Image (cartoon, rainbow, N blue to C red; front, side, top):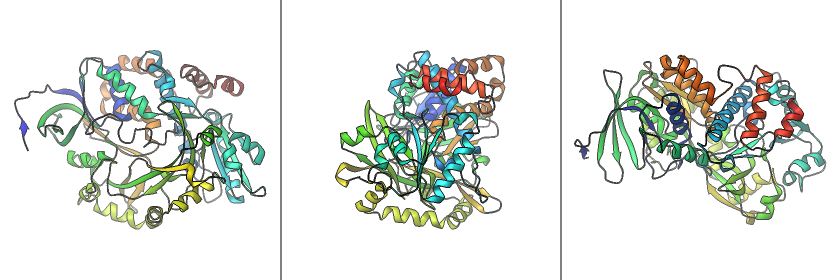
Length: 509
């Protein structure tokens, strides 16, 4: 393969691998913290947000733990653990603060381009599930981040919240629902494109599409040399950078393995594909204005939590149901079937085998999902929309996710559902692995990354003040400071034009 030795590319302060929500967020943060820093962004496809950040590949819930039941697991004693829900809800509020800053400073033209007010509803049926949801509601509403949540077991009231889920349902079926009016729909693809548009206008920032990072190697001085191929010309160039962020979604694991940092040893990946049923009937789409989440099937991954989901995509209202899970050895939607086999190394084969042995129900679930017929998929939809007809829906591919497998002293290896940040000891490299609720919590994740990898600068008064300008609650805990959380929500709802300020003032003032 040809190596371009004549092209002298100046050493960069920062290289971002992958043009998705994570790289965009980190790029804007770093450029605001240090306007002089130079940043190169490399994306293997011909456009930004083509993988996990794309609206059709991402759940777009604005994951805030209002309706996602997998963030509030039930313990053996019947109580509900809300620890993760609180953390996610707080992180989403931080994201909204940052997005408000982007709107106020004309980095984003209009909040209507990427975020909309959509109520979040949890819906269950059956006595045991009703009991669980009531316990969850009581546990969550004891915390100020979930103030304003409503609960009902009345079919008529639930029908007023979301008509489709009740029409055609047996009148004697025990049902329950919670509603959080504060919910949102977020088009992370549109948000990411706006941030990259801003970055491309800044001095010292370059975005390279159709460029793939083939390899990276640590230098003795703490910097990195990257081998980057132009996929159009097939010519490779060597690039030097002081800091590297691997934010390539499912493609992050192979690059982390190539970095050879000790902290990256032992990680594996388990790919899970997905599909949506997309409604094609405008009358049905118009009748539903909510995100309705239910309980995941036993043994299924969290990304497979079923939901009947109102979305705003490219300025149009859409209605999706799913996702239906599947298995593929690809780590990316536009990846290779050799991704999984090539990711298996001596240092991670034991954790991967152990995780596989301990997740037989998941394997069976995925096999059953792959074998589903159109009627099977319709039957699953009918659980949430009893009057659904197959002719009103079409099947579309969703995104590809790679769940993290990591070493575990007790089990040998465990399958993690969430995001995992891996950083080199000297702070010169960071990689983000995993999936949901990644995009919604991107700002908090990237702030943590900056504190890990830019420790000296992050603790200066200059950077502290810059953080405070972008995120006014910085240095405080929205999870612990109720009044701050309430005032923050009212302010960001107004800036982001979510139309919930009256609701917030009613409940929070």
